[in-house]
Image (tube, rainbow over the protein chains, first blue to last red):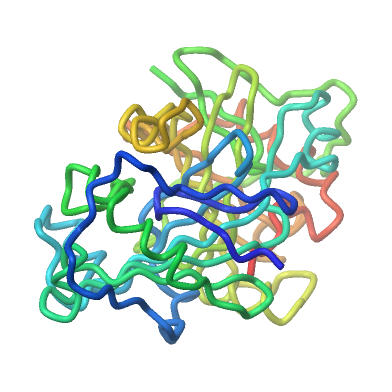
Length: 173
Length: 173
């Protein structure tokens, strides 16, 4: 079972490789009990695109990062911190070569999204998730399982390193 | 001026490199005069995501492929050929490493969308574009200029190599 992911920079799991983002040097967000996202936000696949990303190494992932209306509007308006209600979704896929595209190009150069691996969410609620920078984190694997607390506790400390309200992904015009 | 692109597999221009997809072996779609897209479809940046792609080599591009409602519904319903009114947009960006993300990961592995380079469109109208497989093609550079006929004439022959109604990009769940 693939159930280990990492922070919402843009992650997917390649094969059955376990690639935890846990870091001994990470700053704990708080001593308060962490609260995580346990239900997949409705309709996220219809949200608008924020940007795309790729991770090499063990993750070997392709990500499409989408946002609900609150998140998209905040991005477009340059509003920081993100207002309550903003949700960012990172849809992760395997990063695979495309034989069909390569034939059309006449050389090997094309990579596309392969099988989906997991979807990760950041939900902004400055009160409910005060102990983790105002963001609740969630990770749902393609097989329907959700990541447990051990993984999810690594999200906030890593995202705290991002300079824009704990969000790594920048908006692409 | 960057004004050379290629077919809608997922292309962007890296630097000022010219990377034409013209191929002497490509099958001409028809002897009829080709008709191209000369205006950017309104609201395309708000369309839903079809998938993502990356081209290496000279293009070194990141693509987010979006579709209007007709296109998205056709993809989800597995409807081929695409119905008239379907529009597919490929938003191309430079493929660049992310220093911020790499610091968070503790190693160099993260790539994100850099500056936008161009947007390409395929518009389905089986009558208007009968001579090019039912699709009209358009290419608009970030600087506002549009590609000329010389480039656009290379789109249909290349896309004719795609097995699904001249469309390379597959829908990602």
